[in-house]
Amino acid sequence: MPERPKPHRFPRAALSPFEEPQLTPAIRQILTSFVPYVALWGLMVWSLGVSYWLTLALAIPAAGFLIRTFIICHDCGHGSFFASKRANNITGFLTGLLSFTPYFYWSYRHAIHHATSGNLDKRGIGDVWTLTLQEYRDGSFWLRLKFRLVRQPLVMLLFGPIYMFLIFNRVAHLPGSWRWHRSVLWTNLAILALGGGISLLIGFKAYVLIQFPVILFAGIAGVWLFYVQHQFEDVYWESQDKWDYLTAALEGCSYYKLPRILQWFSGNIGLHHIHHLSPRIPNYRLEACHLENPMFHTVRVLSLLESLRCLRLRVWDQERRIMVGLGVL
Image 1 (tube, rainbow, N blue to C red):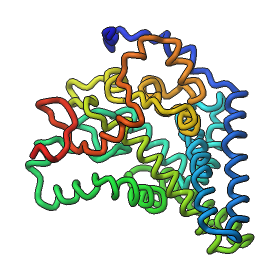
Image 2: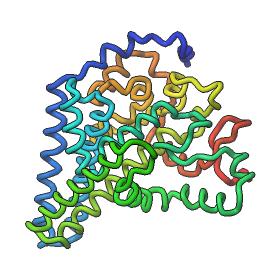
Image 3: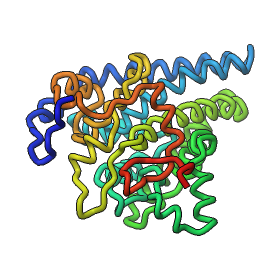
Image 4: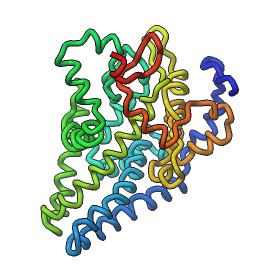
């Protein structure tokens, strides 16, 4: 396998040609995400009169289009979806409503994640809760119990999305300016207005029966995507004095090679190594950047099948420099 280029010699020129937003692909992505999502919502309203099993079946593709819509919100937060900052903020706020996400506050937390990913001394904001093996061993009984519970796949993938999108996102948890609280407040009010308006049309029960499974299915997929992109066996973790941004991107982010249809629904976010190298590259240009630069082909590749093995990983073994399960204790 070719040697990966050293971070300090990484050619910036490989990224810059792809950092310019393009209006046509952006508009196309909005149309192929939002329009099908609204259409499926209409079908789900109709399906309630036929069978709720049909409603749940329709919730699966609806969740896929919601993920694709959230990727638009995500890119807007990075200022990469449109060239216009105003267009990014308006689109980001509106698409954030559909996933119950406070756009400005979430974008701030997500920027912290990008700036600290793989840094052992700056864990805790916008990442998956991770302990080192020694921290787990030295932790109290209650800390270990809480950690085991949070990192259980059923809890993480089923209750985690419910907590994150329906509860956690309703409050600004970071200390700081009123701006973050205002972002959450306006989002909450807009969600209430949107949900209330739909409930007046179809009834509150019908709204919940449709919205809840869509948010749940999309949330499960979203949490899973984020998890496997930073929690594989030979992922990069390093202390502050040795941490390097470019190395964290190339070695701390996987290339999650999904089937084409899943890559389309997830907005190319599986090309996570490139996204972390340059969040300024819009999702609709990530694949082109990857294909045109062979140096990116040496990063850690995770297949769909292989990614399932990541579920057993829990803690970072600093001596062996790999993620391990708790069975090593």
